[in-house]
Image 1 (cartoon, rainbow, N blue to C red):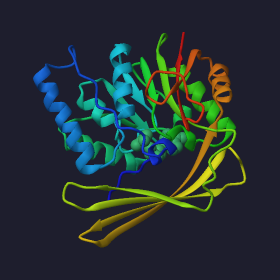
Image 2: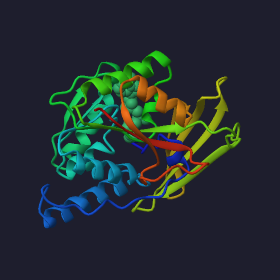
Image 3: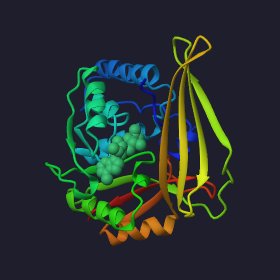
Length: 282
Ligand SMILES: C[S@@+](CC[C@H](N)C(=O)[O-])C[C@H]1O[C@@H](n2cnc3c(N)ncnc32)[C@H](O)[C@@H]1O
């Protein structure tokens, strides 16, 4: 069974789906792009029902402005990278997991695409040519828990970016009074076109540190009322206050740092549980 893995709190809470923005030259003709968008919709809805298109749409807008290569570290199975590649963007990806990279390649091949993927840790990232945009959507960056690893990753991203390039990264937000979810199962399901249901449930448990949440995710596939597959995954995700992450970005060399509401390019609301940072290498 291959199930979509929502990685962030915002996704668990069902962030509003965003339509892909209209696509314009120079990437492709409008007819070809209509077809590309249909393929993306098909890919996301058939294979990954409930997939969140907001980061794809936002990265796409930034990518168009970047006028150059894009790189997605921690790209996993490519649920963001592949749709962007299908839009004709020059995007490469990296991840430490050969299994995830193989899944990403398979997903791209099924759409007739051939992505440039490499197996590497973000802390030691090397890319050529230098990207104009590096982006890490969803909760992936929060998987780095250790202070030294976090700083090494941010410094490396800064190092490999082209001068004038941008870094777009989503961080889970540490709220002063987080909603108490300890010990309470949460869940939602999505229905596939064939009527099967994908049920996603989670249980959060106190990890001993206020800025690290530990959760158990359960994925179930239900066909004709019968449970046909179950998967469990553990997640430990680090969250940050806005000033804290801004300080880390500055320490890594970034400037012109903006903290935005997730994929809306406007200031944060007080209770937002995710922050999208946009930082520049000057
Ligand atoms: C939860 S998955 C999300 C993948 C993708 N960003 C998405 O949202 O669908 C996180 C990915 O980060 C990768 N990863 C974890 N630690 C990493 C590191 N230090 N450097 C590069 N990749 C890493 C994992 O192998 C995994 O594929």
